[in-house]
Length: 414
View 1 (tube, helix red, strand yellow):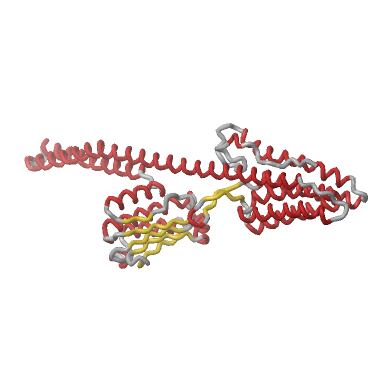
View 2 (view 1 turned 180 degrees about the horizontal axis):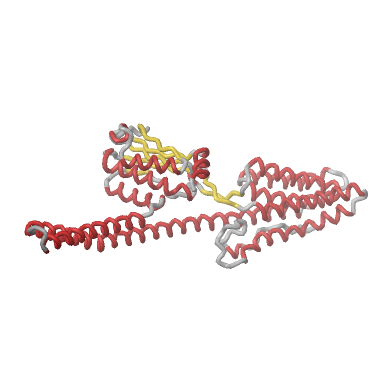
């Protein structure tokens, strides 16, 4: 028998993840065909299904058919139900993983192997075709090393079992099919994962560009309107003093002084409005703060160890972490006198350590304005702000998101 293996769908739509229903789809609905193209290979289970129906007894026919349909159903459900997501492993390395825990993946593969066993009871060596689908499922739902073991053991079974059981005929074409299918699906999932990481990098670049544009607009607004309104305020104040010095009783001069005083008040109010607009236009981002911190620390001659990406941090936590990073960087530059700074970022935690002068007096006294504001921000986001001595010998500023507080904050906030 010449076995044709289930392989991955064509990578011609690279840039879109056919397993991710939330991925961007610039080609309309075309990427939705990705899982369908993979599931088409279920047609190669027709042979073991037919062999099961040719079994000598009704019980064997039923058992074999159930086994083949179980293999097809699990394979189909894997590609349709479980989309791949990006996770961060040791060393900050990002990989694509399905939405399955190791225990759930093991259970899924065990059920599929059991279905292969049922199909072999009726279809004999023809039922071993199901092991090709087990290999493909393993490549998709477990890590690379474990999947390699599954593929290797499946190949051993395909080669050895038909030669041990009487009445079975070896079908070594299944081995070639298992190798080709596993290699193809592994390569395709790598394309998917790299495309996702590329999109995330592009999004970070776009976020930085937006942040810089907001900064430019805010700076220009402050420089143009702020300067003009400041001059108006100064001139109005001077005119008020001159008129006040020359006023005599309740005559026109006194009225003019009152009007000029009103102008001065209006100008100061407008200046405050401009500054408020500037403050509202300034939205911090974690990626932007990392870039700003690196630039500022390099300019100050401080050795800095900063993460190169923020993939591990969920989007809803990045603003809080950005404020903590900004406060930590400000403390290093203004107060600590540190020569080395280490910033550690994880999904639920950001830590800024330095080797400076130790805990500042503002932190010992209960926190200055910056730490007080950060504490309130952290509490509102379901996090805890921590200050204290650093393992480097200086000051540590850390924020940790607690699941229980985060859930409570989500229920309380309107």
